[in-house]
Length: 155
Image 1 (cartoon, rainbow, N blue to C red):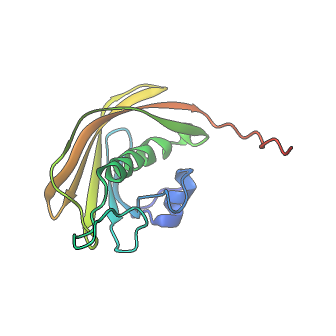
Image 2 (image 1 turned 90 degrees about the horizontal axis):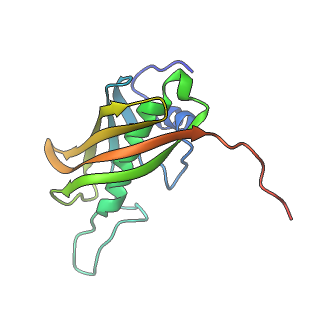
C-alpha cells in the first residue's frame, strides 16, 4: 500500500482493524515513520458516546479521547511494511493528564511521538490539542502480535 498524505477515513480503514463506531480517527495529516504522526478527530454532536446530563453541554469522555490517541499511534506503527500483517495491542498507559473537556464541534489534533521502538514492543507519547491547547497527554505502551486469520467456529 502506498502512503500519500493526507490519509482519509478509507485509507485509515486499510491500516487499522477498527470500524465504525470504534474507529475514532478521521484523517492523518503528517507521518514520519518511526518518529511522529499527526491525526485529526472531528467531534460531532451525534457521536454515540458523548456524555451529558440534562441542562449540561455534552462532552467527549476522556477514555474515548485516550483511545483516539492510541489509534493515531497505532496507524504509525502499522503503516510500516513489515508490520502490515500484524495487530497492535494497547498494553498500558502512564502519566495521563486530562487538561480540559472536548465538546461537539471541536477539532482534535492528535500527535504521537515515538519514545521507544523495538521489533515487538514500543512506547509512544501522545498529545491531543483543541485550538492549540492541550486537552490530554500521556505515554502508552503497545505490543505487536501476529494477525489471527482463523475463522470463527460456527456451531
